[in-house]
Length: 265
Image (cartoon, rainbow, N blue to C red; front, side, top):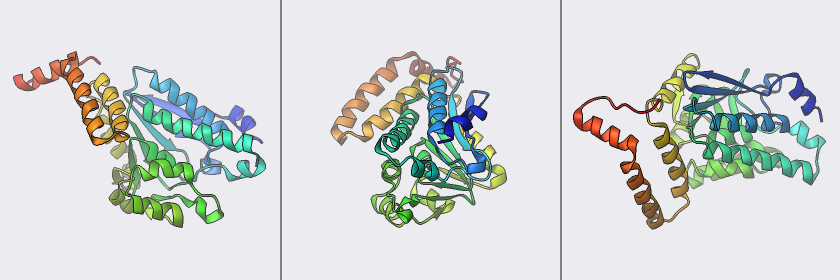
């Protein structure tokens, strides 16, 4: 396997910080950003670092080169067809997805070209997604005998059951307008406006209190797994604590006084 050598030659995930937004770029353009073990290691490390960085308010995940990502590196998997390697690969991938959900900052996938299999999984696992108008999405493993089980977890939690089943069992592509209609992504932009639209979405969350964003994100995903009654019970505790903390006290007082709130940077 040549992944360690490749990783030593160049970072497989690039990080660029600007005005509170950390952009993590998948960086195997010659391989269309196919996800290998080395990239997962780099992505996990980058996400962990960003999650603990108080200067970062929003995270954007992008892809270098012509496409976002076609999913796992099939050549690497074929060259290492044993349970230890393959099991570790998919566990690492699932850990990355869970880290994206658990980290306090909102995560936006910025998609161009194609996002298939594990590439589509990243899009579905992100909190938000913006796609170029010519982007396409698929859980295409079924086409070559590999059911997209792990991508199916976030995909089936983003779109309706029958649409998720269609994607997973036909492997067919859907275009960006369809992905928007189905709820897989939030916005569609022209290719030349993809960066601008992604930044605009990010900046809508930049002036909100950091602690409230983090608390809200934790609650959002937690309540999805609860019964309605338990979700309301949890929500009552969360909003009560939120209302009594300094951020809400300042925000509500500012609204009543018709002034701009002054929250910690």
